[in-house]
Length: 414
Ligand code: HAM
Image (cartoon, rainbow, N blue to C red; front, side):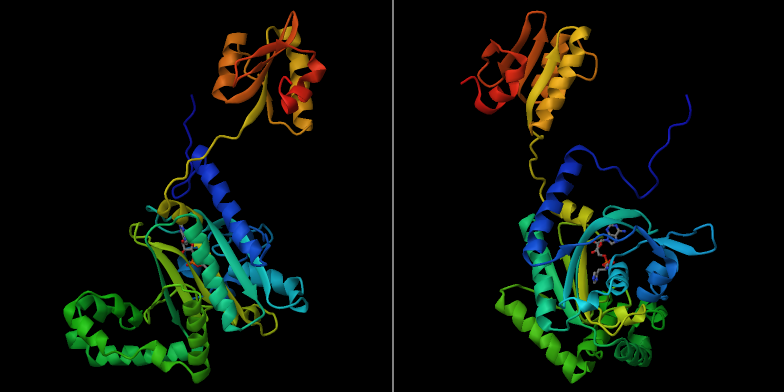
C-alpha cells in the first residue's frame, strides 16, 4: 500500500455536522446582511501580491511573513488572499462602483490563507464572513457596520462576547504618536520590565498590555492615542459612540486597541469571546479611508469588518442539525429492476422531491434498512408483483401503479 497522505498542517476538512453548522451560519449571515442592503460579492482566491503589499502594508506581519506567494509562471507574483478588504476595494475600483449610489455595501464569505503557527482557533486556511461599505464617511456607516456583526454574533449565540472600540486617527498622526510614546518609554526606561524595554522601538504600543507593576504605573500616565486625535476625528468618534449608545450596544473604549493591518483610519473595533482560548478575536474591523486611493482609485472612504467562521462556531453552542429530509427511497428486489428504480427516483427529484435510490448493490433487506437510516418518509419497493409503496410513518403499505408515486408523495394514500 502506498503512504497515506494527510491534509497540510493548519488546514482541516469540513464534514458532517461541521458542514451543516457552516451552512447554517452562512444562511444567518446572509439574512442579516442582505436585510441591511449588503450585496454578496466574490473575488478571486489569489490576487497580485502587490495588492496586499500596498493595501495591507509592507511592515505588517501578514505581508512580511504570512503570505502564500508564488510565481504564476510568467514572472508575476501572485498571493493566496490573506484578507478580503483590499480585494473588495480592488473590485470597487475595477468595476467603477464609485458611479453607483454610495456607499456600495458588499458582503462575502470564503477561504483566506495565512502562514501562521497553527493552534486552536488559528489555521493556515480559514474562512471569513466580511462586510464592507465603501464610499461614505458618515459615522452612521461605522455604527451600523458594528451593529451588524453584533447582531450576527447574537443570532448564532456566540458566548461571552465583548466589544472594544477605539479611533486611530490618520496614519501620519499615528506615526507621530508612536514616536512620542517611544520617547516617553525611553524616559522611564529604568521603571519598565526588561521585555517592554526591549520592545520600545519595535512596538511601543505593546507596553499597554504588560502585567509588570512598574510598567503598569508608567503606562497609567502614558500619552494616549485618543488624546492626540484631530478635532474632526474626535467628533467623528463621538458620533459613532452616540449611535451605538442609542442602539443600546455595550462596548468598552480601549485606547490600546491595535489591529494587524495598516489601512485603518478613525474607527477600529474588535469582538472577542472569553469562551475561546488565546485566539479570542472573533471578528473585527474598522474604517479605511485611504485604502482605495492607496491601491490606485479615487479618494474614497470605507468601513467594514471580517469575522472568523471557525472562531464564531467555536464560541457558539452546537446547534442540533436535522439531517436533510428524504421524501422517497426507491428499493428494488432484483438487478433487472434497477433501471426502473433509477428512473423513478430521477423523475421524483425532477418533480421537486428528495429522492434516493440504492447505489451500493445491497440486498432488498439491506436497502430497507438503508431507507430507515436515511429517515425516508416513503419507500417504493419494486418487485416481481409490481410496485408497493410503504408509508414509513404509519407503516401502511399498498401496491400502487408506478406512475402514481408522485401523486401519493403529495397526497398520501388518500
Ligand atoms: P483580521 O482581524 O485580520 O481582519 O481578521 C478578521 C478575523 O478573521 C479575526 O478576528 C479572526 O476571527 C479571523 N482570523 C484571522 N486570522 C485567522 C487564522 N489564522 N485562523 C482562524 N481565524 C483567523 C481582517 O482580515 C480585515 N480584512 C477585517 C476588515 C474588513 N477590516 C475592514 N474590513
